[in-house]
View 1 (spheres, rainbow, N blue to C red):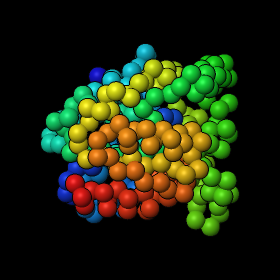
View 2: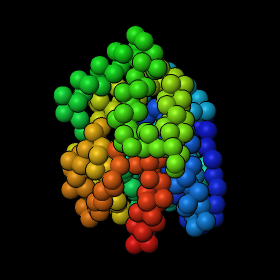
View 3: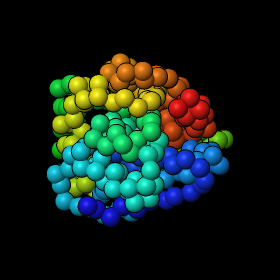
View 4: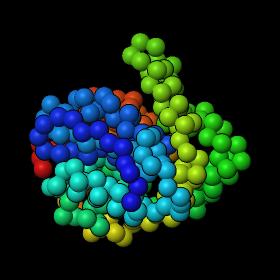
Amino acid sequence: MPQLNFVKQGKGPVLVLSHSLGSDLGMWDDVAAALQARFTVLRYDHRGHGKSEVVPGPYTLAALAEDAASLIAEQARKPVHFIGLSMGGMVAQALAVRYPQMIRSIVVANSSNYFEEARRASWRERIDTVRKDGMAAIAEQTMQRWFTREFRADTVNGGIGRVARTRAVLEATDPGAYIACCEAIMAMDFRTSDGLIHCPSLVIYGKRDESTPEAMSRAISLAISGAQLHGMNTAHMSATEKPLSFAKLVSDFLETV
């Protein structure tokens, strides 16, 4: 089991934040700040990301869920609310099925439970680019997918700075770990297993998200009995682009759990 870097702050019920592919726990800074007055917020870096240990591939989403389960067992020791964005949302789905006793509720943001062949082909192209030219070769296109045009140009509210930090983290991600995660995502198929999730669930999508559009989130919400579905006026990185709105959606949802 890899050594995972984590940050634990706040008081109250434990809320775990799981980041996207090619990011790190810093993507949650503003969301965590908004929630830690009411919750113990536990953020962590996935294997091969941020300051967590880089371990050789192949990776699977089951293995990423096991990483999260081990962290929860060590740092929470009781059921948690688990919030994941993009790849983190995939981990949330796997975790809720494999370790239901550890989960009080899940939030699945800007994510998917399956990719059709056309989408898998784009993942293969991305893998080939990273393998040949490194992480910097995909950075610009990734930022264009992850953030709206106006956020990328925002000098008033700090959008430019947050995009620059996000890009730097992506470019610093270990290429081998990134590729191993891409391959794990390509192999994902939770269309049936999502029906086994029985905890309270919130699914969030970005109305301008090209990476995981509304239809993917709607499919998750339909597969999970009783799941709520909400949209935000963002692209893919909703928790970075509109952290306070994201935190309020989460907080309001947890009031009902």
